[in-house]
Amino acid sequence: MPALFLILIYFFTFGCKVNTPENIKKDVPSTHDKKTPIVFDVIMIRSFPKLGTFWPAEMPEFVFCKSSGISRERANQGVFYWKNLGYPITNVRYIEDGPECRNINTYGKIIIKLIDNTVPINSNLSVTQVSFYRDSKQIQSATIYLISAYADKPRLIEHEIGHALGWKHYNRRNHVMNPEYSRTGFDYEGLEYVEYQTQSIDFFKN
Ligand SMILES: [Zn+2]
View: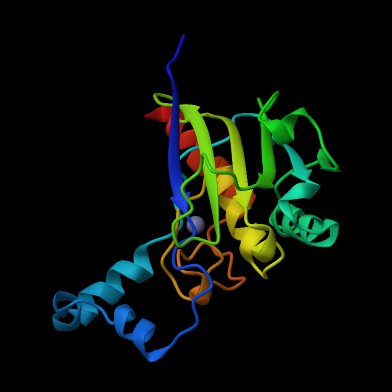
């Protein structure tokens, strides 16, 4: 029986901070980066989004709990974003309440629910927890915790679904998996389902 490894993997960092001069200052690369800008660029061009964990075989069921604050429209848009990249997502529910919203019967599902005091939110807009088998990296379940006031923000649910599917952060401006909200966009390069399958197969080989 493989050990189930529950880990808090992903944070949506820096929340909805606007780029005040103070924040821009924080974005300035370190002295080291400034000295070697070309090397840094080369690394960025050759990099691509990476899967940290994955759903084996079938896509999970999506369960949106209304109490999370997300609207039905934004929930549908978020799912459609990934379906449009080829992900064969077929089972999506938007519910008033259900056992999944109380952390029961979550196996094989991505649950979208309201943040609670068991999850450290820090300065993030939302948090996604992925539980997976440590050795095989196969995901067992995932939960996206939302703050109701921010639940409908553009690109937020798209980003968190990316984590719930297994994608890590990808540090390129305007990419949907950029870790900093103000730098996210709808660029999805490298996230297509064919790429997901290719990287999933690589987990089996290792
Ligand atoms: Zn993130």
